[in-house]
Length: 217
Image (cartoon, rainbow, N blue to C red; front, side, top):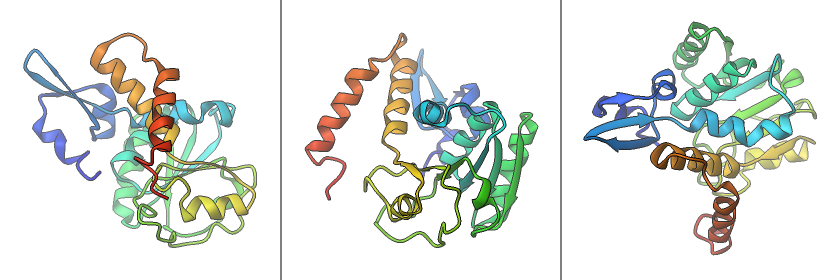
């Protein structure tokens, strides 16, 4: 943030994940070539798959249509979810929906506001930067299905105002920490090959959190 899309033009080649997302968060130098990769989508999927209990046919609503949202949306569509995308700039939401449909997925767009989507959403993902500075989210989640898993990809602060409201309304909530972990694991594998030591990485991440490196209260 905010260079995931701008960096693309500076690279020599992109992995399929980065090409689909049109955004890069990981770069490897190999034989003098700069290779751009995107771990957002696959990292996110790995972070929620256990609690979501399957993706096929379920409805995901994404708030935001920037670099992180693109990777997440395409990965969820690939898993068989139906996507509904809300963004302050409607054109960006429509562009992302079209990209999903070109890949064979199902997507729609709507106003960046509460609506009927709250009643039947299975997974709600907040991908904007709103909340990084502890500010309130611009609209209420009142009326959301209590069955929904609500995720804010921000991990510092550990619980944004958005997540606090979702929890009060009875939803299960996740911050972006597990996504960060799996993004790191996938980057490790991209750079070094082999399977990343996820258990050790999770512990190292927790250790840093306890030291206050990420969460300063």
